[in-house]
Image (cartoon, rainbow, N blue to C red; front, side, top):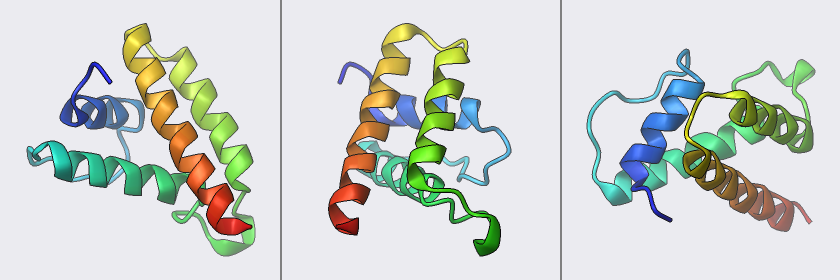
Length: 96
């Protein structure tokens, strides 16, 4: 990864400005943990009422579209997508 996790977390905040993610400055390790946990919650659709939750695959699709359409630099987009892929693989591994 070329960008630090605080930079990636800030990029995530710019993509989803309505999310309640701490605004305090975090170190590398805490930024990484928060970013991975937030993406995991997003893919599991934990912020939606259980009756209308969508599958992680659908949420992943929406996230990829949002990242691709964003004005973020291409390298930053690719790094965020790599994290989404890693989290998605974790979810699929833990689900089976």
